[in-house]
Image (tube, rainbow, N blue to C red):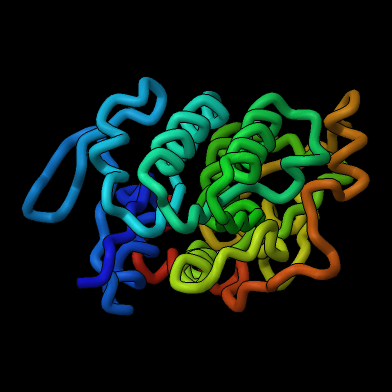
Length: 255
């Protein structure tokens, strides 16, 4: 029988798409979760404390690390790769964020430390950096648009990507040979913050006044320089922001 693939974050936005792709490819899949469910090969574990990780990793050939948050990714990943090394896992696949090595944000510094933990683990690895998902950008703009006046960060550009495109690439990596740091994946189009906000307002039928604002400090300079983008050498997704909005409009009132 083929050795299983362990997926962390398998119940999240990306994980819910990756797991069926791996199973459709004929691979048995385990999911690391805070709650066990033997009927679905869901193993209970806590990446931050290390509890339950060793039993989940034991016998797995590949580990696909998709779990993450605003803090603690470095600690969680270090615990995971330690258990993977002990279990002689043959391949770790890790998701990260474009700009993790360039943007001066604490949560991205944690992401970069997680990348290093994987690269220095002694286990063969592949890491994919992705742009912001369409849904994340949508949620950000939705919150901004609750106010009568929407602050528009000047110089901010985003290259949102559809998680289905990212999931397909992650599955491809997991089923292939270890490749190290692979080309980033981003959406097919770069948008200004104003373009994204205006398209959201059109799609929802909302009217809001827009107020340009300047992002201050090192973070502002980094975003204006496009350090969060990958303008060349990237794998580009196929689904656009406009298609995402159209699909969302068909499923809900987008309010």
